[in-house]
Image: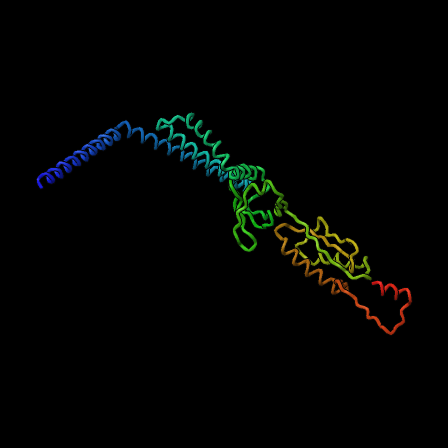
Amino acid sequence: MDESTSAVTIGVQQAQEQISKHKETLFAWVKSFFTWTNLFRAAGMLFVIGIIWFLYKLAFHALNRVSEQKINKQNNLALHKLLKYVFYSVIVMYILSCFGIKLTALLGAAGIAGLAVGFAAQTTVSNVISGLFVITEGVVKVGDRIVVSGVTGDVDSIDLLSTKVHTLDNQLVRIPNSSIINTTFQNNSYYSTRRITFAIGLKYGTDIRYALDVLLKAPELCETVIKKPAPAVWVDGFGDSNINMTVAVWCKSSDFLKTKNDMFIALMRVMNENGLVTSYNCVEIVPHDDSTPVPPAKKSVARQS
């Protein structure tokens, strides 16, 4: 019993000695770290970071003032992102240099690691590069209505990896930037005006010249139809059961849906008021009377069939 008690006592003493040694080591490290030299060095580092932060904010506000007057929204977004990336890069490089980390060795290691990551993340790299092209090329801007891979929506933001749009029913869609670069996409807001065409089928027997004059009255009833380019009406061909007519008008891109609805109403109005009748596909059934004599030639054809 005495031996076990003494063993426990010895173990406790050894543990206390180890704890005291660690305490002394910790206190010595803290004491060596919080020296006047290190404190002045930390204060200097914080001062430099504060100056960099002040310059960043100054450049940020200056860019905002210039952007409101001379830079469009898309370039404004790209410049703000570039400024933010430059600021964080400078901060990180300065902090690393303060701790004695050589940037040349770090960049060399980053280059080797970048090759390995690049092979493993080719899609991500492709989206980043495509994002830079989208931002600098300027074919898509925030607020534009675009159509990509069957998705129609208004652009909310253009980031390095993807472009975010909201659809007409207010659903968020994330489109990879590589899809915009590598596929055919449509920007309905790139130009300030758009053309709308309407296909109309009139029944055979309609006076074509009269129909052209009547249909040309419809754009006059729509206030959002612009005068130049002027509205146009033409014959598009002859169908199986109708004369194909086309009406084309121009409007501002922002008035597209309103102009389209107003033109449908105006076309129906002028057609009803002036007696133009649309045609529709129909099958005419002619009853055959068995009591009517059939010529011999037709009888033989009927038997063969």
